[in-house]
Image 1 (tube, rainbow, N blue to C red):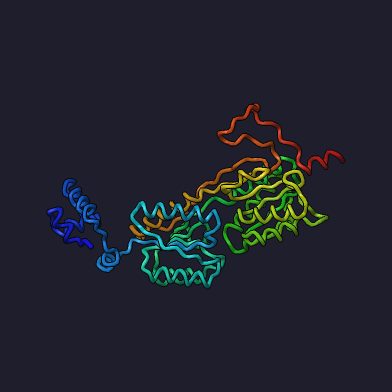
Image 2: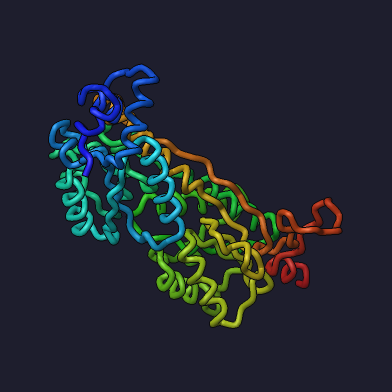
Length: 367
């Protein structure tokens, strides 16, 4: 196996110069740098990153702790984190806290013990022990997707990166109200998560903006997963107080809601209109196609890495909370006419048709 000394002899330079080229620790003349890189390629030299970390006390690695990595939303976040980390010369160590506070503390400790230079964490609903560990050991960390009270702007300890939640949820509600719906239900996420609280706030703001009263019977928690949402949707759609429209607060819960609707023999949007928070790859393949809020998931992951690198470069800089905007993806599950898919030939008029009356409106007009 080739050594750094072999590279130095082949390139006709000192070992120190090879080190400066590979580690970027000092400017090197372009022709010298190229000679070193050519020697590295010719000899097949691979730097000993473990030995380098022992000398420099740096591993150039980042720890990522997110739950439900199988969820397409977090998968895209992971892709954003990994791409940005690699672009800056960092490797990635990944762990799944399973949204369990005790397991969360364990995996964060294990990542820290592997000498990652910083952490990107999607905190659980009860992050007290996580905060205590990170604070006690002064671990540079960025909270991702979910924010923690007291950790944002104003000189707090930890940086945070997430999407806007309240305003996009309100937009789904007001859109349904504009279609004539008066009983709009929400399948909310796991209690205790900031995303759940903020989307409930947006739901209530949307109702208020539409002049509709808040009815606690139209809100149920699906615990951010499919099975929970299936149960919550079935309860919301029980006879006597059935809503005419439904908003689901993440992609996994959308799947559960659709299962419940199918089990009850209800059609979307003819019987119940449906809008969801979180767009995902196959939302455009459902029939009807799903009207959704699309989060900038890859950008969230990439921004979290950049914020962490800023923290590593300036440990004493004020903490900040970065919020990224979402996009409203209008399709037909809300009850509006279907629109052409991008790139598909369609001879219909480019003018947007008037939306059909929602079930609530049709019933009201018959009375």
